[in-house]
Image (cartoon, rainbow over all chains, first blue to last red):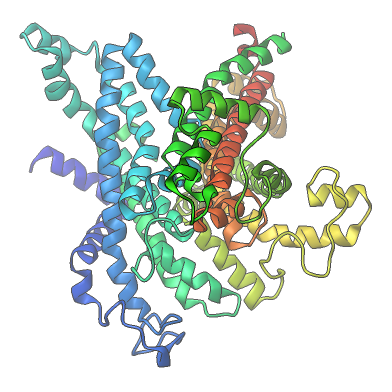
Length: 281
Length: 338
């Protein structure tokens, strides 16, 4: 058997939670892809006769104040939430990794300038900066993605910088240089693939944070607008009914959000176990 | 020596402050809506709008506008809130103590739980308490803070009836204590109004708990990791070999050293706390600057939003500065290097 696969199997057998996290991740992706096909009801169809019903056989998660089926809405919302967080994380990776690699490789002035940009972002409480960016760019889903990408960028830049810096003098880099590779080629074909594994751990940990951030923004009324099903906004809609005891409107979307984030975090820890045995939690 | 250190840190915070002011200015100029058109009213002619734009200084170049902006900030001018009809600076000043009281209460609660939990987990790796600490810290970072807040309200207000309704800093029957510090807990004690103290504490408990649940995770994780490192170090072994009591070794030798990375983590924790604060304020109708900004955002009233972002950022830079100074105070090595 392939040694990599064997290693992965060894790590998975040592920590079954990681296997669970992978399964959960697959489930979330499936729901995101096929959610609208699985949902038993139209997530937007209101039926005021059936408003605020407790969970029952007909409505597994109950209904909200407009009589919409919460189960269907939670399932359909998966796609939007996953889309936002995947897009945001991909964007911040695409922004942060090259900046960090350049900073770590060239050092000196480049490093200081990039460091200044990163420090500027980090000088704000991140969620507050995201609020400001969405307010400035306009209240839309795309701008939530941009805001989330910008506030996550520093983590990638810092990590890529540290990892690149550590490999700048490595043997394989010297060898590549001696074989006549230019800077750009060394960075793209030798440094980047080497720092990719630790960066992927950061990506999966970051997915959870991105989803939380986006849901938080829509909870306070930014980005996603009703009646679009999205976990954060559904919790916000349900929050009005908590004090009178109608718990299911807020509980189920909140649980879905929590499970997704939990799953991404476990996945990150699991990936770290597979990639770097020294940093096992 | 310490004064020297503080001065150095103060100078070090200036670039962050400049960055914060520049970014806030740029965000301000990117905000949608034309203030000149707004102030001119719906019936204004293009010429009148142009005149007002000139009067507001919005026809100047961006660098000149920036100079004006700096002047406004120096005079404490944050503009006028359209929703409350008050100057933004005044509104924010009135609401800031509520936010700070909530954030600090959350942080203190979190430290009270996280430090012992982290220490206990580190002294008994692999035990049930270690597993508990791990579960708490993974669950803690996964919990959407607005969702935890609502769950707590449902359980402790609706089901058990232990907590008061999530409606701000005091219930309807209690009047606010005389303003001394702006912190209701401290003011009510200073003026000797114990009934008010109890009411304010009751209102504060759930939101503070929500914030604490959220920030226990990184703090406990860091305490555990750094305690593990310190406990296996030579000086702890020497202290043990010299027959010092378990408590002395753990607290005086190990914890004091292990706290350094924890203090560093505090910076990140504050970033999360200040952000989470906004969400918690919304859930508990807490009259702080977070809920003020949310109300303004929903009403497309942008002056309060700018004021809020700037206040939060300055608060955060100041907190980081305090952490830096604190770090110097508890770690003599930093002082010597300085």
